Image (cartoon, rainbow, N blue to C red; front, side, top):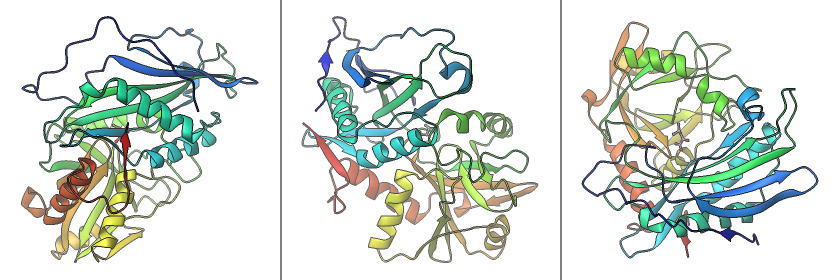
Length: 356
Ligand code: COI
């Protein structure tokens, strides 16, 4: 059990008014969690402090070689007042998998969960209640040794910050337009593609800027070896409904194992809906669109939840899906997952954990 020292803010900020739409990731709550690591001493000095800037050496290793892990999960306020976390165990498991991949010491799972619960509890009043909103939780670890050589750091800082959010995309649940990237690649098997670390996201920026300039929200990556199989979108995993079957790329070492992705697969199975995790080529999607069997396309992610895709662009081909509208199953997955997250629907998989 962690001994968490708590210093409460003396100057609480004003809570965002319910009348303003919450832009993703722009507002931060009153408190944050911090814990340090040092080789030989382990994780220590767990504390909750007022949210404020932190001070680091300009030579801190994270600035130079990117040794950092981050996660994203959400807390919800149920109608009966309970505060619920959605599948935090999956995020904790993935965080430690990332940590192992990039040589950051693992964080004991029960300490991680306790830290999440403690900081969410303190800032419980910040959990927004309007439909489509939640409290986004961003745990992360950075390497802090002041050193310019390349090696794993001996010191780290683990932090958790909180942000009341609305939809990730300005489109909300309205379908987004996605550009299939044919020039750059995000990751290859054996690299860090399946780890949740900043390097994967910086690798995506050039393409994202290009896609934005063309009026597209994000890019869909294809594999870096054969350059023909679909991988994932920058901030979400991707699903297709082809001829009644839900298909998504198989986790192959270069794709992020998304928690919402896993939830959609479990729900599909429980509904008796055929679901396949396998290789999907661009040609297959192109063909399915041409012969009318591409019924729906949607992305899944903690931030994005379920994000219907209304248009895909591949080279000079534009593929409209569902006439640019929301598909029946995209809506059903969205309603079911958010219903469970908000404690409105039966949680048959025991996905939610109450913060007490
Ligand atoms: C999330 O969905 O939580 C993520 O970490 C994606 C991020 C790009 C917002």
